[in-house]
Length: 316
Image (cartoon, rainbow, N blue to C red; front, side, top):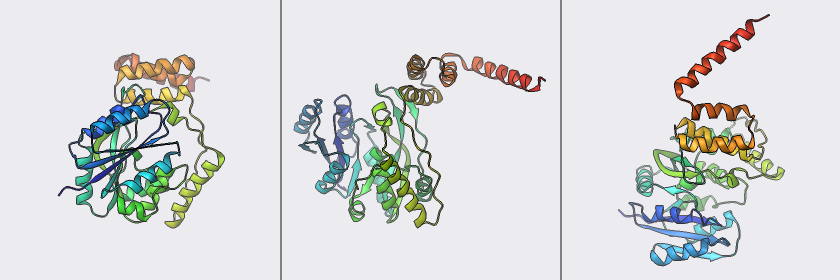
């Protein structure tokens, strides 16, 4: 039986990536959907791209208006949606062709699940593949454990939710962790899970990862997790205060994922960027060895270092 899906995508100044994101939705194998795009006051030319796509495909419902922010845009999209299911999408990510079909099949066969995410690959700001992200939890109990330890169990732009469940818990709230806040409330009225399939490419961008939280933001996030723990009789985790990410740290993060996945071209580019900013940082030199030297050479160097360390420790 065909079931209407409402794909919800807010857009704010994402001209470089938005066309690829839109095409990845329009080319889905499951085609019975409406595509609600909220142009949240873009000033970089994104609006023109959105209008061209809206004219070419009747499934797109484009709303353009002055900037109001992410949460108001998401709730506006919810209020306009007509589908039984809400599928989130971000303007800089890429959905694989079978994403909607696979998630719909999963939710149709698991009626107690109110929200499901997917596994995903990581790409950088130039669409270079960095490898697979850490697997997100497949079962509700594990997803709740992630929440209670301060981790976000669902990758927001990959999520499909039951519209009635989202509305029943009040939709999105104005919170610095609006996604985690929603997952906590949804987990109290049904199950939240992830499918095992990799169905999305999630983009790592410095301007997103380097977001600076105010003291009030951090207090609100800690309180959110503490309240969830208290309801379940669990001691809240000790949450370290996150520090703003530097450019060098961003490039090391991308390089680490790429080295692990043996995506050596991307790894080398990001390591060079990190070295240019911090040429003497040992972490950069370690990653450079893994990216530029053959594995047998790296293993041999590690053995030599271990022997030297052992020898030094035995010296009087």
